[in-house]
Length: 364
Image 1 (cartoon, helix red, strand yellow):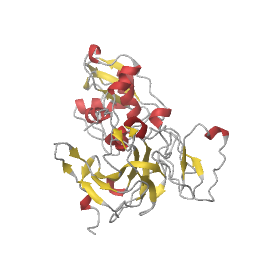
Image 2 (tube, rainbow, N blue to C red; image 1 turned 30 degrees about the vertical axis):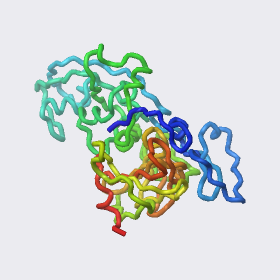
Image 3 (cartoon, helix red, strand yellow; image 1 turned 180 degrees about the horizontal axis):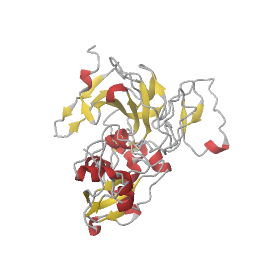
Image 4 (cartoon, rainbow, N blue to C red; image 1 turned 90 degrees about the horizontal axis):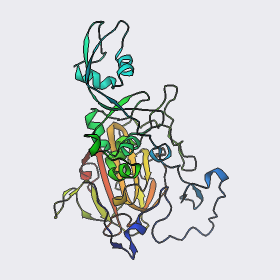
């Protein structure tokens, strides 16, 4: 459920003051740094980025802004009328897509074509009408959805995208929407119509790569964040048995709550500043604060399609694209976002589906 904006008071500060800024600075009352810690002088080109304090007390640059902010999308979708097309000698689905402006995948679905998408000269194909956005290098699903003021999940569904939901350069994506009168007109209206959630971050945050680009290997330290528009090689090995990210009282369990809301994870009450541990080996898919309900947020991707989510952090200790080990400190707990108390929100997702974390965590 997408959280609406609620003004309240948490721990002596307004909600907006409790929501962390991008990049992992300390959000709650600061913890005293180690006595010997000295801030590291940052190069000029890095001073525009927020800082984060690492485990050794050294201040280092946080990751650059996420790709959907660093590389916004111009909403220049082409409106394609429904039509039929007679296949010419030498045609391929991609060539027909370029000629008509429709997506090759959409054409294949409309005509019941399966891989390897064999077509023959003289064959008549249905060209499905709609608005089609041409994906450029570095663009993300989130940026495309935000540009048109539609939910990324709707784009995933309407285009029948599958895991890992990464777009390719040159792909034509069908943009959902009704009549022009029903669509957001200005950039501000489109941005207001788009609401970011965890599912968006899991499925729509990786940038599309050009044909001559390859995904980069994960970094081992937040001091060397991966480039904003680089796609990161995902983990492939099974994560094995998880460990508890923190130890404390479970104050909210997975599933429907008392007032009817659904909790996609569990909430564990812990003092502010408690180290939050990676539940398993993985790669950081996201570290920031763009989902207001969860404040400081870390998302880890593991092998076999599993993802873990850690919310309400007061401080982030990792950056996107960083490889982490089971039990490694990735954040410090807090009460940021819409937290009811100092607590950790912890989720496990199998693909896009939230699952009960108790199925993966040890019983004691």
